[in-house]
Length: 166
Image (cartoon, rainbow, N blue to C red; front, side, top):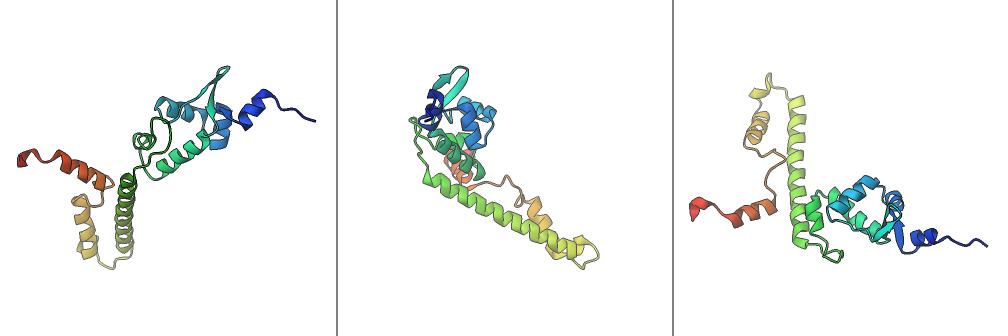
């Protein structure tokens, strides 16, 4: 009969050392230390020189990965957790991010369609093509810029207001 060591019980039961968290999450230990420095995760202590985490850390890291994949900044993700570490997800922020993604999709589709048209356009010069001219116009107005204002940025700009209007 095999008896488990105390470190095996800690890994399987309640605590995971940083190497095990890295293995389970697929993140390097340096990223885990960075996330801890930023306040996104917290170790529960140390085993020798290694940080030790509660077993729930893997799920929290999965939520952080989901937020990153959706385009949230680490600061925005940090606000989606309570002081006790429980998820506190702002549905408005999710809706705003979904709208921003929709805008990006529309912008990229317009760019793709314009490029495909330009590649196959029968006009002697692209500057003679009305479709290409519209694409240039949209680019000059910043409509194709990846930094176009998101719904959240537009709301923030409205809250600050235009000083000339006051």
